[in-house]
Length: 114
Length: 112
Picture: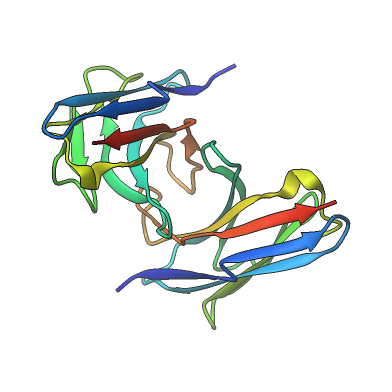
């Protein structure tokens, strides 16, 4: 069955370190998204991609970067981790077809920055 | 500013009872409204997606309603089960499928 996976599921790092969170989908979807979820807030969009070599900034992109070298993967990099980036990170994907399309979510990565 | 507000923040009901969760939005332009279920430690899973022309949509024991004039939606859960314990999130999309405006969710706890 097609799925979307994230790794690691849990990560503890120190302030100032570079961290990369992996996202891999086997849906063959063109669109991929990264969100963060903080207590008391809705999901907030960090970056998104409409296809290979395409990346776009979302609502809260400062301090984060992504690259899309193939259809299946969209890794999220925190260049220099900060305590404010402690959060749960979700990756999602959706078909690039026209009309209303559903987003499918991975299980999340819980990141703690000490 | 585009916003989605949900109420109540949390709700506890007994197994077998019905409940209704509310969503108010100030989003323009409006394309569609979605309800997601998020189990603890998991990613959100879509329950329903409605356009402005749809005022009711069901998915098993879940029934969503939409009033595009008053910009309100509700999610009604019938005959609740323990597995319904989760957060329920209302999400509104503008003219794009790709950028969604998320509510903070209602945390529902079903007690036996």
